[in-house]
Length: 59
Image (tube, rainbow, N blue to C red):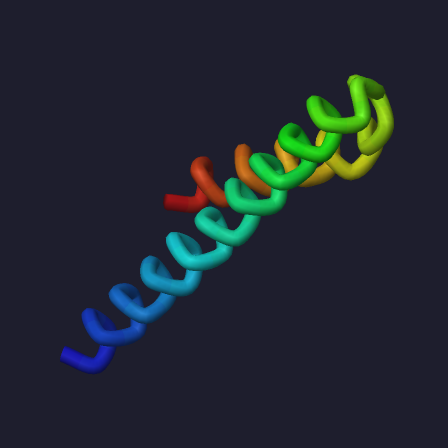
């Protein structure tokens, strides 16, 4: 029972982190569109995409 709770909490944390990353990526895309500079946050976007892929693999 305790193991199940731990697994559920871990899954919820992963989902919340994924949501945060997606929100940041959307905000970056929006900023880049407004400023018309597509590579303004290139490094941050690449890192966030890698983080998101790792999270998806861990589920």
